[in-house]
Amino acid sequence: MNETSTSVKKTSYRIKRYYSYIIATIISLAVPFITINGNHLFLLSFDKKQFHLIGIAFDMQELYLMPFLLMLLFLGIFAATALGGRAWCGWACPQTIFRVIYRDLIESKILGLRRIKNKQKEPNWSKAENASKKVVAIIIWSALSLIAAADFIWYFVPPEDFFEYIQNPTEHMLLIGIVLSTAAFLVYDVVWLKEDFCVYVCPYSRVQSVLYDDDTYQAIYSTNRGGDIYNDDKEKIIFKAKDLPEVANECTTCESCVTVCPTHIDIRKGMQLECINCLECVDACTTVMGKLGKESLVQWSSTSAIEKGQPTKLIRKSTIMYAVSLVLIVGLLFVMGGKKEYMLLNVNKTSQLYKIKENNVVANNFLFLFQNTDSKPHTYALEIMDHKDIKITRFRPFKLSPKKLAKKVVVLQTDKLLVNDITKDTPITVTIRAYAVDEPERISVTRKAVFFFPRADKLK
Image (cartoon, rainbow, N blue to C red):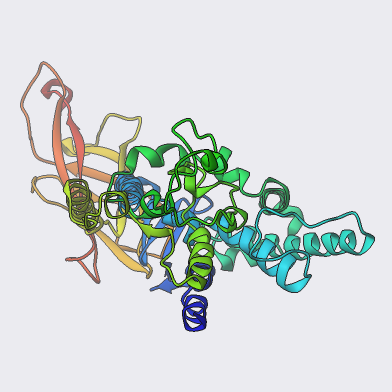
């Protein structure tokens, strides 16, 4: 018996979750500081109007990747839910991690205000000592909330800019206001709103039941062994069973699985949207039933395994469809990501349609806007690819620093009679190639420009 209890303690889901929380926290804090070739691992910068992904910087003109990322996010959530229910909620969600830090670490371990194994019982604040501890708990969490809020902002304002901005607070009041507002919400959320956020605010709980099937892993109570605690109307009938013939139900009605639940539900009622799959109830029942030499009545399993006695199928129609969809989206993401332009170029015609110079030289003026989206400086040059009689003038190759913009007035002109038409001006589409002199194969873009040639009677 003691060996069973000790084994349960060593391998409890609570301890495994704590490790998961530590890993998730380290990752969330570290990602904003990781850079590859000067670009961040993940950053959505509204300040610089850039999106960084795996060390590649995309400007706002290149956000064609965003739909693929959103599809990947939502399909990934759906696939994870179909397989493991709300495992994200119980094992990696920031809301759950914050509540565990406040409730289990600060209130229980540090200040001794409650027992970790009783999530239902709130500390008694009537005594002055407990009330003062409550204030200390809030102060500690407020400090941690500022760190969490800053970490959230770092995914939109990179740390190197963030720390520079806060040194001049009067010039960046909006940024500081967002950090303080986010921290204040986290204090309210974790200290007062608590798991009600998961139950009433988070939309994920509302869609989970649609994504579940009989092979979805979840915390599930075995009515075959434990017996029915509730009827179909969710009315408790266990204590009325004395009037019924005696049955060999294994549930001791100790209520351990209830008192340990952070969202205040009874897992024996069946699947409920409040369940976040934290598996606290599995640990509680495993401990109680282990003392009786029996297997837990609440398990991390599926409806097929517990109620039908059939093996859980990980590979099934829904998971195959999700896997195929995710592979296609990831493939498209890499294909589209491989098309990143390391130089952006906009070509616009000036207000003057054309100009006729001496000796019937016809000139068209254009405004070229260059942007270096690479992480190093480049020297840019231009060439016309499809009209040898049209030349580029008033332009010399120039050097542009990374992430910088440059406007250049470019003149295209010709001294040839391209069109002999006395009725109208003729538009001629010209293909212009802009490229980096130092890396012409990697950095090269083509743009179309419309060159207007005047009607013949305007020429001398």
